[in-house]
Image (tube, rainbow, N blue to C red; front, side, top):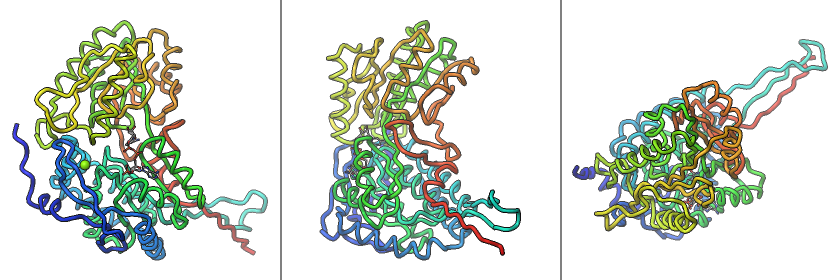
Length: 495
Ligand code: NAP
Ligand code: MG
């Protein structure tokens, strides 16, 4: 199928060097430097974006602090209305935003459209929260009834720094911005240097929706130049980060400068478990989607597949067919179900893991190569290894690419031990028709999300986050409201 024509408005957007958004103004970085943005399907430079630094972070933090003075007292219904308006704009511009996402990240248009639809949905979910940030009235325990009025309030935590990765360039911004805006925080956003474009376009939509100047600010640039000063900044009250565990640890340390609040959504090596009675007609495509969706660049990717030995052969056969049936193509091709990896660096990392797995004796069942017919772009075949005894590093380390490691099991207690034997604890999957067993296993898994007979069902009503080195705190759902508010107790003597 032919590659979609790029819309004229997208051409115009790409042609213009993109600036920082600070205090409601579009501005060059203090250094006037820019950096190139690459399309990973063609390796072409498609845009230039301002290269921010510590001086720009200072300006953005000043603007966010200034805006916080009034935004925190804005009528909750007004904050809700602005978020609804932003959701409408995201929806209205879905096709254009999807093209920008695909051009910058490489993912198939189908999934870019999902990301836009999901963003609008999440914005509306949190718009509803703007009017529902509630405290409690708690009778004091050491005095007669009616002598004290004792209650709690929830105050917005203040200026937030948001550092987001490249795998879901729009979703990750919205996960953080939507609840923060709802409760009256202000923000400085730093997108990943690989995928800054959608964040720029999102700022334009914030402006069009009518958010006051300085409530949300954008500083594009590298982790070192922008992420570090932002997470160390003395006037930033909270940092929320999604990305690698290594950088998450650095951010946690940087954030101690002023004891800012920290939430971290980090890596994973999630176990996906097939019981012997799983309905394989659903489990096999489910497991393939769990690892190959978004080219495997998903923190919850079901990258460790534990298959009961009774069904191993049938499952391996089915999984290979699923992998070979994927349509690898430029994401702008409507038939594409797998685009390129995001960058040369990520492509090199994943290939290194494949070579190491081969050297360590894992059995390559399918994939592992650049697909034929592709001489440009970071395309890689969906890859499946069998590593029965769980010896290779690909059974332990997060790869963040389309590489599945399959292992077999026979004893349930041992299975649970193996599944939990990871520094990570982000997600897990269970496929079975025995729901009683599914609940029992779910109760024992060390994972923030457990999906039974499904995978990656991520919804704003469900708390999302990890055990162990997969992070700190939870995003989404009403749980996240805690991360963006401080609890204040007010105790009034009524005499
Ligand atoms: P990363 O280094 O963790 O980057 C994520 C974000 O943090 C980017 O915006 C990055 O800026 C910024 N950053 C880097 N160093 C920083 C520092 N010292 N202080 C503050 N911010 C900093 O992720 P990556 O290098 O892009 O990918 C490497 C690995 O991370 C992947 O292979 C994967 O394992 C993992 N990862 C996980 C997720 C997830 O959803 N949990 C998402 C993406 C990647 P730059 O613009 O300089 O990169
Ligand atoms: Mg890019």
